[in-house]
Image 1 (cartoon, one colour):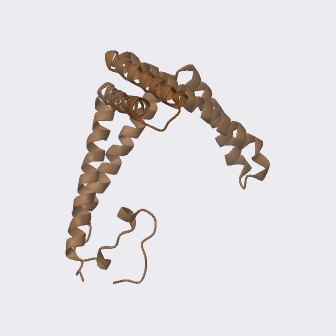
Image 2 (cartoon, rainbow, N blue to C red):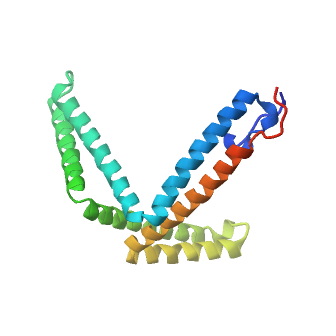
Image 3 (cartoon, one colour):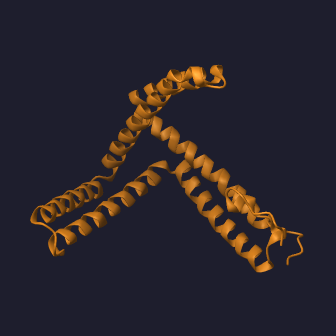
Length: 200
């Protein structure tokens, strides 16, 4: 066994010379599965973005439903809570259940609404980040890059504010492409990890 400890992400820093054959096989399986999942999700996001977005909305609606039922259960059955707390739990639970039902009833509209909402949030965040970068320009080690980054952040944020759905669609596409690349790299690593190494 080598005395050096792996640093960073384990799947990147693992060295096949430091582990046993069964451990190498385990790492290969883990890399292969994670790579295949990333690749499949990336392909769906790139080639069927509407289906992928609808799938995310369905997951969100299920989460809202489960949370709503949990709050309702706490509000109705929990003993030892004040009447006000139980009433608040019931109200929150009802609101979450209603939001879940509305999301299920109109997946397309909910998807567009969430895309617009996320686009506006990201746009505001980019504008704020750009302004902060420009304000701290004097402390930056490279003023040219900081100036470029700050102006770019403000412009990108403004563009996203005026077309949030389009902006989120582009970010969604970039995320899908990134997952495809990551998936392919992980699958290649699954086949090559530990090859030609005499294990301990």
